[in-house]
Amino acid sequence: MSPPTDRRLVALDDEVPEVDPSAWIAPGAHVVGGVRLGREVGIYYGAVLRAEVATITVGDESNIQDNCVVHAGLEHSVVIGSRVTVGHAAVIHGCTVEDEVLVGMGATLLNGCVIGTGSVIGAGALVPQGAVVPPGSLVVGTPARVVRPLTEDERSAIRAGAEHYVDLLPRHRRATAGTGEGETGDQQDPHA
View 1 (cartoon, rainbow, N blue to C red):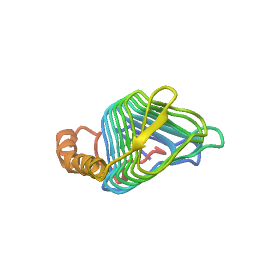
View 2 (cartoon, rainbow, N blue to C red):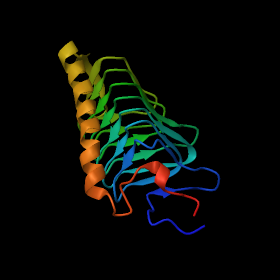
View 3 (cartoon, one colour):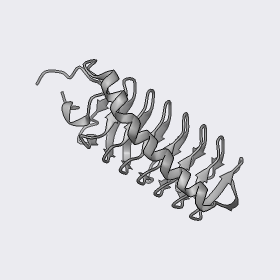
View 4 (cartoon, one colour):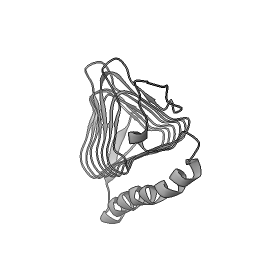
């Protein structure tokens, strides 16, 4: 088997990334080991998703923005739901992020925490290990704390933000076509 020209997907022994054909992975991003990307997922420039000791699952229509780190911890898989936006330079480590959540830029989520559906984690927040955020919460600070419930307009804005990133996928796919990177996951062989 000839080596792939695209090194975005990396198999670790038997742990091979599974990428839906409609997903897009930017040049310079890396998806390593037991990672599963759903429909119309966008993995943006410089992001790293690394799963060598537990799995990472990213649900449909979610986006992991530039320079994020998503890492499965020992005994802590990462589950990111559908229509989730993970803002630039956020760190997601061994935790669960339910559907329709916005994780702000530079936020850090630690092992075992659970972010409830329809919540916002503010930019720069640090969600401690094992914390449970109720659905529909606004969370800020270091350490992070729930400050109030979100309004329905704010929850709608989370959905609109995720839809915006799905709408951007064709532009990025066209811009990176023919570079050997930025193609869909089904075009690459991570074992080669």
